[in-house]
Length: 501
Image (cartoon, rainbow, N blue to C red; front, side, top):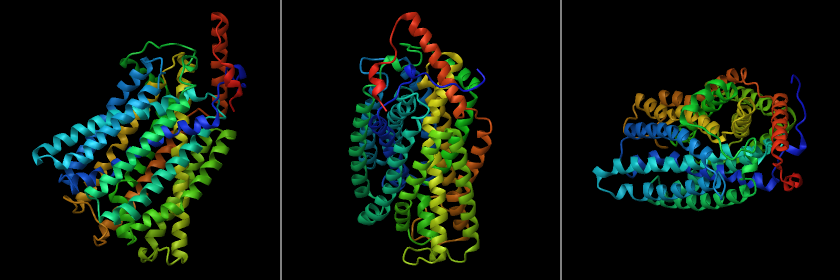
């Protein structure tokens, strides 16, 4: 077929809007723990007494381990089909493991004899990674059963963007403007309250996402209505080798993830806002200001994606982010005193900073939130060219490479800070600003994201899953499903789906 064809309505399955919205909370639940682990370096160095370079090396090693667990867990998911579904059991199990590991990691490590702290810390972190991978793998893989309608898939991004914007922006505000001043630093009291909030919210969000997937986590939504797929760990390399869209999306998203992970390392906002701008609390306040513009950009972007496709929207947003941060970098290189940027001094300098910073974060947020439905597209592409439904494998291939690259974030920050003299402790808000700290702050906050976006634009040149090609893929998958249904005289599209909008 050379031209796009409409997807046959009898074989399109959709979810209700509330189901998509609640399921997106599964990603928010795992991102709560992702956010919490940004502060693990401050716990390890300030409470448990582990050196900066040691912590950076451990975090990198654990992130690498995290990546290597992905293929195994993806393999398990693809092989699993219980009476409770394929995905829901792993979502619940993953969250339980996260709860237990965080309680032990942040509340027990520092109470152990010094010689036992480091081995215990490593063990608990490794267990934490397993739970995290269970839950995050389901977010990517279950997209395929939630909906296969190319016009509906971007809706997930709107909910996901809303939740994650509130989480990361609100979380930074909560930490910088409330928790850190309340306890006078990153100490035991800080981590006790912090982890309690994370655990309670994570459990609630996971429960709601399980409810949302209840109707759709069934065999009739698995690829060509297959009950199981014969696959082995050896199949991972052939999938990577033949699935060019997956390769390109991995490069684009992994480099962007590295950039955002570097930005969110706790030392980076301390350096950029606390030292360069002279007001650490500004990080939370400015982040709160960016919430509404970021969400508006995302909603507009999702609307554009539903009309023009995910790829075109993704590329356009990447250009917007790159241009905004390029102008922001020039801005910091030409102004004389960055500390004049203050919400109590809304002059031209402050307004210029707010506009460029908000634009950059808004475009950046849109690109991040479009990735998960794009992973579902690469999974459908695999089904289209091979007939195999392996969303767990596709999702965890993506996660594996993504984590391999983004695992470098803690090491990059730790080693580069050590190069400029911070070998035993991270910079604090009262550390004097030096030329090396100035340059490093701009590189971490602006330079690395810009390099990531350049890599994204190059990789998208070779990503062919635009709106027309995805419509063709779904049409051809539908034809195969129809032939299988006629041959086996089975129904693979429950009538309840026709009521879903």
